[in-house]
Length: 116
Length: 114
Image (cartoon, rainbow over all chains, first blue to last red):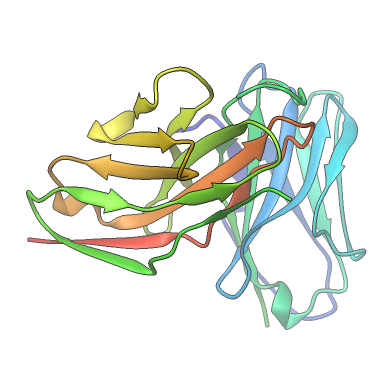
């Protein structure tokens, strides 16, 4: 158990809908990351937050947004869903978001999203 | 940009034989290298990392990895594979020049044959 908790584990929704994925980082971790895993794209970095502020942005679509709350949990909002958004979405956390350092990033079990 | 390459799609090995999963990297500065394993329908589990120091890094479940700067490689190894080691293995890199995200390879499916 990595200590990173994600909900829901599975989600099936229709095209055009909006969903919210929730993540609780490991106790004491300030940095939260979101990754998307799909068969054709592999593991893609979406976005990172550090202590409530956006720190880095990757291949995140404009239809997607995220935030980190004062209690450090994070939410990933996916809207106007398309079939191609079906994927496994991982949340991960690390102790800091320092630019220099070898902090280990620990991953949650993921949220399986199926868009039908 | 930082990147890693895992040249093989699948690695088949007999139980009890040595297991090697290959990874090469490309970064602009000093590399921070990681290996993760993903079991079916599970999340990514951290195995080990190289930051600095000894080129041979020991990790979880009997795995180790060897950092080779001249060959820009970070191969994962296990002296004696178990059937339970069958999983998807990912190499990842983070560089030291301000980019703190991990870039992952495509992953290697390891199949340990009883």
